[in-house]
Length: 232
Image (cartoon, rainbow, N blue to C red; front, side, top):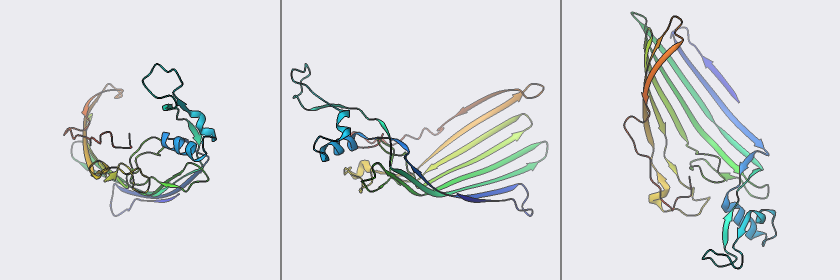
């Protein structure tokens, strides 16, 4: 990683930091997905070590299923071959002071994700996770762009904060990773959520505080993906 911090004298109360990160983790622990366990067992013709994680129906089962069909798959954490991620973090901050001990703080945090890959097995190529939602055997939601804008007004013991969270458009499952997901489920647009909070401190040393707040104040509904989605 490499970064820098700017605090220009000509622009009082302003700070800016830029950090570039490029991280690779070998033998990282990750949750092996059910799809990976199944495909590994099939490719090994039932002889691979992951086949032991699959439970099949026995003869005489009380459940209305054909003996031999898959009843459950026990996912488990394993040391993956490697995880790689790279991107840029940018943070801006500015404080405006005015009369009667009042202050307005403005902050912006932005992350650009350039790379996010997972190689579950050294014999397999890395899987691209950038631009794909979280799910079993995945690294997490790979939003290409994330931003957080905040405004905080303070006056003596009182403060009020507004925060806006931005998440860029993303897919449920990338086409290269499969299985194919219908476009109406797979394509998820960008989203903005708003949070607010008010706070008041009291006591001789301001050791007490009461606050009230609300997340997602405009009650923006998350996308409903349905059973065709591969994410969670």
